[in-house]
Image (cartoon, rainbow, N blue to C red):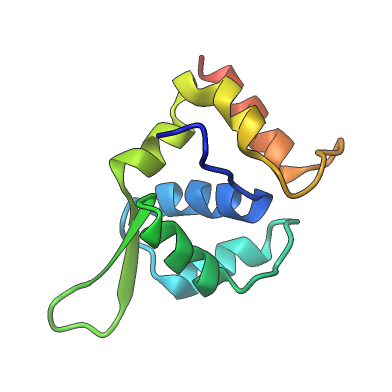
Length: 115
């Protein structure tokens, strides 16, 4: 991962949700989980997922015999969520400052607790 990668709060939360789905969640499950988070909804989730796929952070695949998509983290995406990248995450969030109730702050604290 390079220092030039910048993530928005939405991208970071989507990475967390893709990780939680462990490669089993499709757009429906991701959208459902995202609807319970207090994060910006613009741009559209699928636009963000496709951008993150182009950036090499997530991968979309379709199981044979099924029209459903599935999303999984790539090694680059997983490295962003690893406990060792805690300080780097603080530099990646660019869309707005964190407030006391920010889901991104919760994520950073959760990651910090694992170190």
